Length: 110
Image (cartoon, rainbow, N blue to C red; front, side):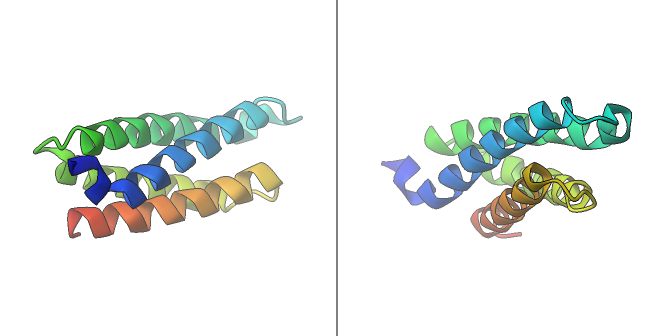
């Protein structure tokens, strides 16, 4: 099956999407939520592209590699933003985003 070939990257994408969803929800509960706007925005973008990338890989789409290159870029941007914040949810999200970016870069040959 095609998806087994990409399972490590699929798992990284799904874990990253979950971390981003958790981070964005937690950011909305922060005292200074306005200061977290960019983080929340990137969390939402990242979660969506990760889930889409995982789906493309799972079905063996010919566009999976191209989508994973974009996913890696968005994951890096999200990791950079989350890395600016001291909250545990942001630090955990940044780490998940870096793992996903690395997996997507390997998968896509970038």
